[in-house]
Structure formats: structure tokens, C-alpha cells
Length: 171
Ligand code: ADP
Image (cartoon, rainbow, N blue to C red):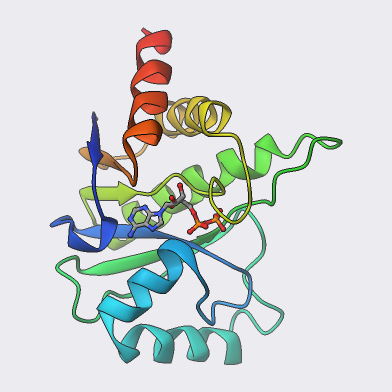
């Protein structure tokens, strides 16, 4: 598996699937979630509503992942995953790792071979970037997925630098 870091906007990526840092409601929100729904159009929300009406009546659990169409985006699918809110008093890193593992599992089941991820939980959910980068990269390496390219799309030079450092530290 090739691991690639880029600085940019995930909604512009030409990959089979992009991952959304969603919330449990699947009804859209701020940050990357808002950008994906805005640029992808209403078909994504329609499928999210259908998921809420069927499999996920109580919402998508933290650490889980599910796919919808990507609507008008260049990607074919959006894989929605719900990151944990960062906590200083409780270690939730297994849930953050689970987002990456489960998203790749969904990608495998779709037959997606290229997948782009944002830095899940590092925005509104406040996870420190360096720690999130370390958890994300380790989880992806350990996932044993048949995805051929995982692309991390970092939204700022600072986020890119943290991921580059974490990748270097892993050797
Ligand atoms: P969370 O609620 O999981 O923290 P956010 O969307 O608030 O999700 O933030 C996750 C990360 O995505 C942050 O690092 C944020 O800067 C970044 N981000 C926001 N918009 C985009 C975008 N269009 N493309 C890629 N990353 C983005």
C-alpha cells in the first residue's frame, strides 16, 4: 500500500473514495463534512437519511464507517466515519484508530483501490494533530487492507508538517 500526504481540499481529490469526518447524526455539519455535502450535492444527504431510516436509526456509532454515493464529487463514494471527541481524561485512541480501520474495511468491500482521508477528529473534535497523525498512520499500516493508495489530505501547512513528521518517526 502506498501512503501519500498532500496539502489540499479533500473534495477535489480524484480517488475512488473519500472519507468524511462525519458526526453520528449523518445529517451534515461543519468542517470537512459541510464541504463534502456542499460540493457533492443533495444525493449524499438523501442516502444518509435512508441510512438513518434503516440500519442506523440511532446514528452511526463512533469508530464505525458506512458508504454513500459521492454525488457530484470526482470520487465515486463517500465513506462516512465518526471520530471521537478528544478527551484529556479518557484515552479514546482505539476509537480514532477504529475510524481508519473500519473505513478501509468499507473501501475493501466496495472494491475501492484509492482512498483519501482527512485528519479525522482534529477540527471541531479538537484532537491534537501530532497525536492524531501517529494514530492514523499506525492504524492504516496495521489494517491489512487491499487498498493500493491511501492519501491523507491535510488542510493546512501545519497539519501537513505534523503528518510528515509522524510518517518519518514511523520509519
Ligand atoms: P472533526 O469533527 O472530526 O474534528 P472537522 O471537519 O472539524 O472534523 O475537522 C477534521 C479535519 O479536517 C481538520 O484538520 C480540518 O482542518 C480538516 N478540514 C476541514 N475542511 C477540509 C477539507 N475541505 N479538506 C480536507 N480537510 C479539511
